[in-house]
Image 1 (cartoon, helix red, strand yellow):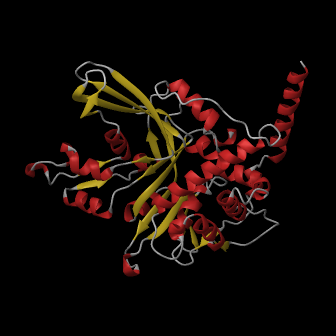
Image 2 (image 1 turned 60 degrees about the vertical axis):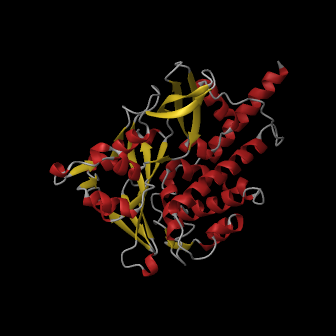
Image 3 (image 1 turned 135 degrees about the vertical axis):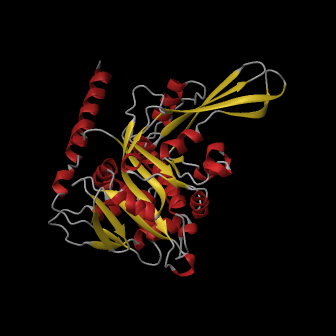
Length: 395
């Protein structure tokens, strides 16, 4: 009984600490919008950070944990550098009236851990986001483990169950939990079925992002290679069509352990579990959009296809919210830029006033919902951030 009482007291203390440290974004309503200064071709980094810095749960977590993370700066260098950025993006109104600050300190912290992001060479926003999410995830897992049992690390003996959905989710919860996995981790189910003996192999994988595969859709799908007689008919490609194409059933040759021979396997993929924030990468090249234009196809940026994703026909988890609203876009363009270098622009929905803003270089511009699809279509969208549609007042 005494051990149960101690456990209950510990849980109550943790809950009280969380309530004490909780951050209400309402206190930032009078704070100025802060822009990240583009110094030495850091726009790829700025745009990604601005989009992440407009996600409510990310803001609240790193504002709350900033001091704790600072104490472990040697073990959590990227987490601390990122938490400082969030702290500067959301200063108290009485603490600071700065409307811009340099990202150089943050860039140095990233470059110290990965030299690929050192210097002023042209970098990919997608590559940077992948690196940042993976390392924030690793460091936050370490941070959480160290906080268990009065700072003593806990060894978890749970084994990964790769053919059972509930077992796989339990594994993720017990072994892969972080602020990043809590918000961005989605689970993909893959069923490999032998067409000869009908045996099935079911496996699950977790990811932080989903690639649209626009290039594959345009080049390898018959409906996007119309005959000469229909080439003048303009058709549209939506984001939903890209997702459906990536998940379409395929048949490939594989060795079957049961048949002991090389057989046709049917590969079926589904999204089994989705996070609060759904990140989509447009991993194609500018030439793909040019090829689409030659074939009289356009990437649809109408209001319905930009602001809301209806995933009800794709997501299999009955408990998931299946409607997503656009939260942010990282775009790039090279027009008028020397040496063909990319210039990145972030379009973000502010979590405090729910208005859309364009972040470019050292400027912030308020934009309307009508203007957003126009801006996106004029540029080249590389990263989409979608948020589950729900009442923000309840968060």
